[in-house]
Image (tube, rainbow, N blue to C red; front, side, top):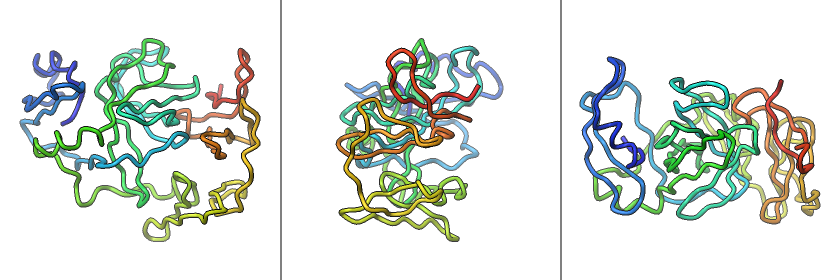
Length: 262
């Protein structure tokens, strides 16, 4: 089990209920806020592989998960939300464009993303949650500590779960590639002068257009359209807000954002 090192006091205190597993701490990273622990009994779910390289880029989508608070509720229930990657370095910074975000109690939780083959990878571990539940999340980029992970027996698995719920990604754009499910996951890289587009209702490679979106972005139906790094990036708001959502405009600065549906 990989989590944040500052969660050690909670782990060392032992299970608080009969539903919580017993853990044994194996190692704490000397610099990064990371901790490795071992379950005393085998888990009932298969482990996920850790990404051994950085395949995310600004504008990509990733999924956060945790049992922490929300803006209106106490924690204790697993929640997930799709976020947009803002920057990639030793720390991976993600944002829900003000609609959702990691919160107090989510520390040590994973940042999940699918690689070019559709395999689900753990790419980051949350260093700190947000008191507002809307601020940007900052995750330790696990590819930067892969040597430490390997030294302690954690290596990327040869295989990991692919797109189990394939219909969720069938005909969608994932990091600029077309992803479909035809009995198995099929990915298609677009050409040098093409981009992945969902404008026709399904993903396809289309001729690339100059990125001439307004500085604050725009809305195309339920899709948020932005220029990120000189390229056009589309985010489906119906999945980017951790639930039903729509594209709209922030009344404070006029920027196009994904909003939770009322």
